Figure (cartoon, rainbow, N blue to C red):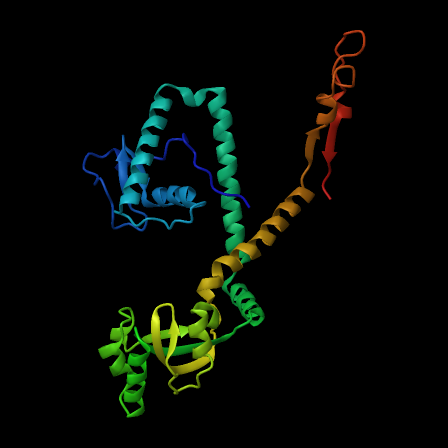
Length: 311
């Protein structure tokens, strides 16, 4: 997969007459892609910052920062410094050097290749395809059982037995949880734990929860946190992951195949010539180095060049 690369010194951004106007605003925040900095008449837009943030965050997985945030401002400062260096390099004529020309050409190739891949991906993964793959995937995902329960936590068995007696007399479980439970995370919610799977809860707690019928109240039981009573509010099958949760993986795996197919097709229809490095780099005394007399042996270019023909 081709990935975007940060170019430290690229061509000078295009300028317009407005860029040189003394009356032009410094920022144009009402635009779809607003100008966020102006450096010696050249523009840096929000998309430039977002693109750089994406490149920096590819390995860390960090989200693109919001405009005005600390991370956004940090990256913008880096781009301003980069722009100043690039403009100074141009003023010194360094962009005309052979090294600069070669590196700029390589940068242009990377950018154009990435744009082609992005375009091909957009065209290759329509919404209908994503929906179809999503439906196929969720049919393959094993979905277990989930329970929604309320619980009351106290420190002693005697307290738990007394509360169970109040419940048997008709007191509301949720009201007793608010009044008596020591679990501060759930007490004000009437002890509601929400939905959980057997793997997502303490083993001792899960064993009781999944053995208690819906609407019933368990006998007092102990965990490392104290003594519990629980009531099962609902039982259901686990819902499958949402489309939005699976979308990145679907797109990644599907587009990988599409990009491979694109590159394979381009290779099939291209003429690719590569030198035979085994001959060029052969040890002394072998083809491409020195013969036994000490005279240099230069391999015939026609013999040392492997050519891949289209098709």
